[in-house]
Image (cartoon, rainbow, N blue to C red; front, side, top):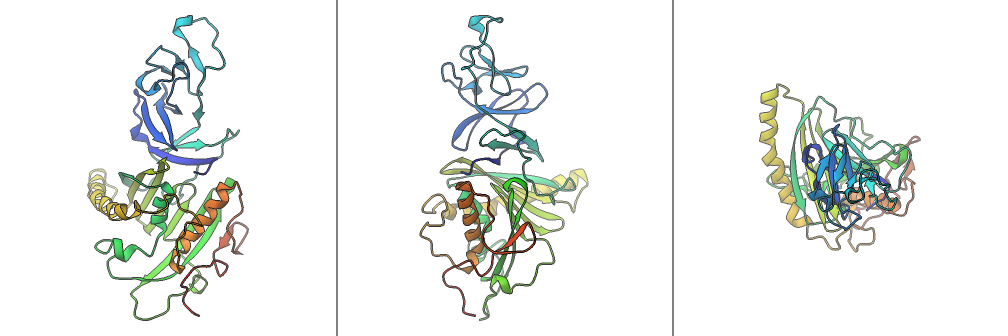
Length: 355
């Protein structure tokens, strides 16, 4: 997992107002709880005194109380009370908890997973998903590394096979391009923009990425490091996903259907609810196959024999490898303005069609 990033890890409605929530994220057991003002705190779910789960305790004002001996910890992990020593006793500095900065917006909770920074940069978000949209969420746990779940949503080759009865209908097996452009925001908030055009194979040669027309509209797919994805279906329908790492072998999927074509409250909710089973069906069409990936995490040197249509996956792996090494350079490619890079002829794959 990439350090020093904002990871979306929960939906807001999963953290109740008066009860702590214990979950595993980033391979760590964490507890989330809300203070008296409703602000979310995230800390390690283990009391440093006797090493028991704090999530079994209770919220007392702006502190979380350990169920074993009543030690109370505030939102930045400082111990505020040791009942056995008395209310006026000094608190040893060693008795404190590690916490993660949190950010709650758009019905999602993100944590800053990395070294402390002052100030912490703002979390990424897809600006096109504004308040005019309503949504419904599908949650699903996948037994796979989060990078593999992400790659599945960048894979434009699999649609007519795993999804031949749903979004892959029509037998459009031939993949033109795809055209990939990287957009680099402040503080390594890297965004992959993808334009694609799949067609029925009638014997034609698929276009290379550099042969595709200059895009004059929004990208069809977007991925925002470290774990957010956006499918721009049309101006009024979108699909969003957050891939929350549970540990190295499991991912919690949050997939949202967004729509703005119906806004009347009751009718809007019925439309959203009707979309829920369809989105779950599409997820489940992918799930069984994606969970069989070997090795678990994606890697540039994983032994796979990639083709031209896998360019989004190649670019994702390249950038992920750079971030894991602590680099901040955008992927190789011809520059297109001060903040853009284009994946073009410099990217190599197997089985590319002859010119």
